[in-house]
Image (cartoon, rainbow, N blue to C red; front, side, top):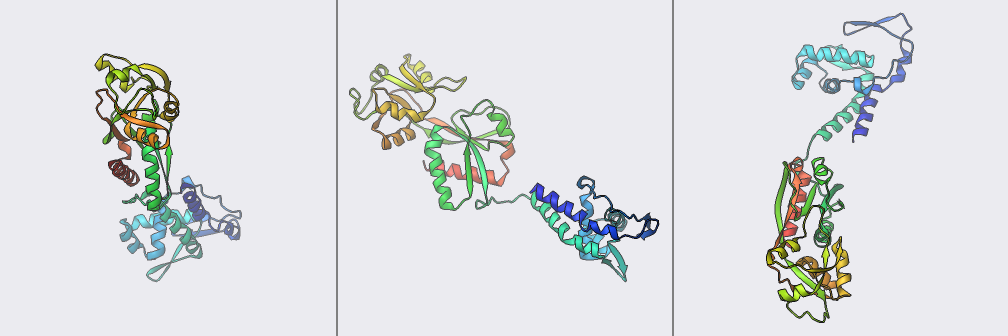
Length: 346
């Protein structure tokens, strides 16, 4: 948008520049709105965009419509002398009379008429760039970057994408890598719009809303030789475990809870993601503790089964988090409402 805007404005101020070669010979002078200056044989230099006061283009646009200084001043909320001064500056800028008096009207010159279309296009682009829509148009192309965990990727993201397809939305979703130390700064800069996680993001300016409560369960292979329909605390502690690697600076949640009961697990293997867990559990006698929605998903596709976890585990809250800089954006508001509704149906 910015490139096309600059191009349009530049085209507006440079239009018909080649006509300068038709000017009168050197030495002749010309009167324009009380100003006297010599005409040159060579074409005048093209005005640089940064030297153009865009307010002048607004005055020119209104003058082309009203063709009267008094009416143009009233419409612009300016004084008549201010409009006349703007016209004088534009006459110097474009090296043309632009408007000549014809009775009570100011008739535009051919040069002014040739500028009308490009300047109107440029001003329309400026207004469109500055205006913020009140409602997000999901049929327009838009990209959201989200920070979500394995649970979100496996459970929420497929459902959200299916809903977007049914809605006819032209929305792209980019999922960032595991949230890290740079996440807060990326959210402040608007590079990551939204995070779904059980770990609360600290710091001033961050908003959060609790959207899910996730129960923890245990997962074993379907034909496990020692685990029946239920699992006691002693049986759970006697098994060897596959666990998820804790994030940097954080303690594994299950380990925190085990500290409460005063016992520790026998860990056989630690993995960085939940993805490998159903492969490991289905081909071993190991047990894993993980969120119920993931466990049910793995149960549908692998020879594994869910059993209740004997630890005194409370449901884990999952929060939707964003930075305050995004709060009033219609697209972001639409995204938050959509995901909150989705989470309510998980």
